[in-house]
Image 1 (cartoon, rainbow, N blue to C red):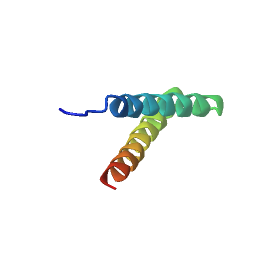
Image 2: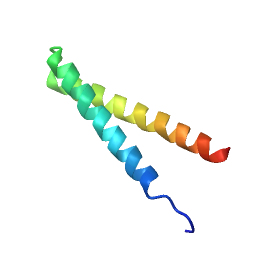
Image 3: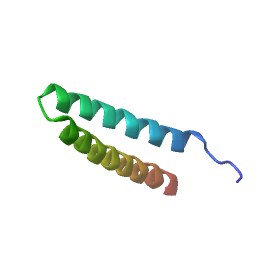
Image 4: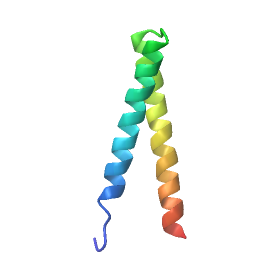
Length: 62
């Protein structure tokens, strides 16, 4: 557990939640139904988390 970076998982979670809230809000403002906007927000959250995780691990390997 030497040199464990606590900021990486926190950054990943915060970014995913912010993306989910932002996409849900924008979809709601554009007139999408609440359930569909929530689903779109969840899909964007998963995609943002995957992209951020891949970028973090790629920079750590080098």
